[in-house]
Length: 121
Image (cartoon, one colour):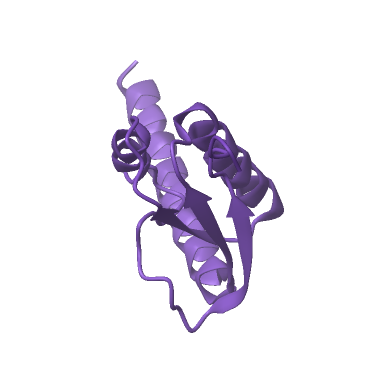
């Protein structure tokens, strides 16, 4: 019985070591940080109804394409909950919100206008 326990502990230790080595090897060969960002500039004004859906769609697309993104929110004086939603979205781990609009690794800027149409316009 004692031999079985020793063998089980040895097998567990070896498998843990192999998992750790494989994890370090994959992190070392991961070149995501070297890829250029896709930069999205979202123009928002009273856009609380669509902001979260658009940001989550962009992040989903980024996740599946394997390309990092940068999202810059440009608020045009919203008086609804757009600012609070933007503050919540800054906690999302895959995008950069309300950040600097200039980045050397930016592949190009895609502007998405989410501003609510003003009455009389």
